[in-house]
Length: 446
Image (cartoon, rainbow, N blue to C red):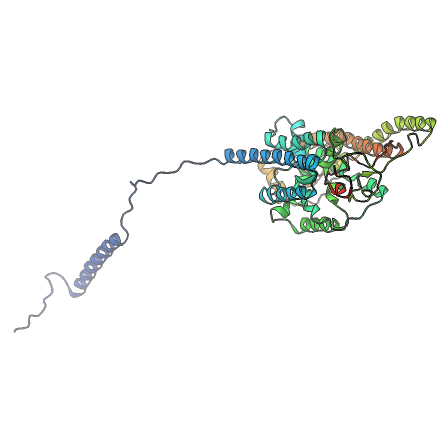
């Protein structure tokens, strides 16, 4: 066979022909690759039978759960009250406390909480724009209603805070009456500050410094975890230290329990004066008999009543004035007052005449507060005006807070100097947690 030599096409040189062939090969390679890509990744089909689900708003479900919590609270209060007044069984009350700790504590993570509801109610009373959820209001009211009729059954086994502390009360020791009185002032201070800060829209300090919610949610900071640990460990020897010497809601329960008609009694019948229950209460809530109907002469008692009549209003006014003088210190916690001080320090002013003499801030121009202030478009005068209104609120609130503390102290002193006649060992309605420990010591069972 003859060999045919390749002859370049007419008008094309060899390098140009090579370029053309390269272009043609590249073109077909791209087409081939594209075809393969189409087969490997087919065109998506948008017309399918898939149905887009409707958007679910979680608020109705959350509201339903809130009312479920209210229902569980109501049922728990009813069961515990029956166990205390009718069954008189410490074992079953303890079992209910385990349930409350599991449900209201770890399952519901301490929220909604009757203790924290104090702040919501206070803010709703002083701020018309704040909407108070009905479930929160019921959590605040229901334990008080039961307490007004049957004593502090809520504290006995429904409150998860009390239930947790009850597990650590292994060797509770009695405290002196004087120490009990001094430490008993702390819940009044806590309650007064919580109401004051909530009513002025400053902060919810009960929620911020709650020692047990962080444990229920497993997210407590180191400081709060340490505080909780100290409370629980001290509860080994001082039964329920938070309930007795810190709980602000306990103040309200103490007051309402004093009017309860069907409160827990140590013995179901007449006391036989066996004295077995005298040291059974770890909360120092058993009052011993006062055998003499008139331990003091009539002139002495009249003189004491006259002194108290003058002493109580005087103490209320003195403490109220002291509270009003603390307006700058108390208002300094509010974010609006803090911002005013920061703006004042940034602008080089010392005192804008709004009652904020302490303007010794070293503020950075790029702080988050200053950035937010600049982005808000507010003027300095607006910031100072808002801070001034807050300080005025704390001036009035300081009077009320101080007067409240003065009244609490005066009534405590009056209760100690005016003995009450009684012939039996009875529970102190205000301090008794209805835990039924004293009932186990009484030999009279029916």
